[in-house]
Image 1 (cartoon, rainbow, N blue to C red):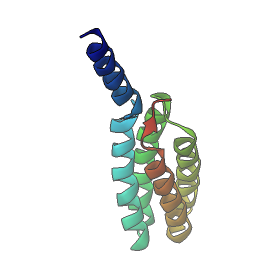
Image 2: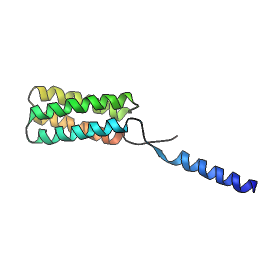
Image 3: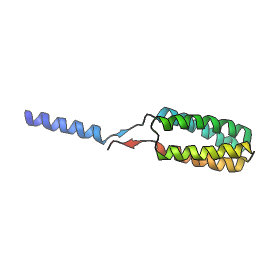
Image 4: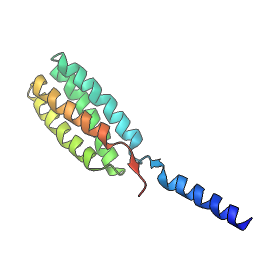
Length: 116
């Protein structure tokens, strides 16, 4: 009986240590991704003003995600959002869109961490 409970305990422990753990930044990261998607959509239509509004909102959430435990990818997303905002303020929708797309890629890669 003692052997069976030890095996079950070891199995449960292995299960929980092997499953992915979601970071605390997930809600903010998802909100940032929602706004960067809108920024990209407007940028592709040449709407620099609307791109700028969504990039700024995305930046707010991306910084909050970074503060909540975001990783190096979220850090890179913030850098690209900053560039998107700068180009959006200059009315360069095409260049701002490229940076917003890079930010989106990094936000997507920031996702799940494994428990190690």
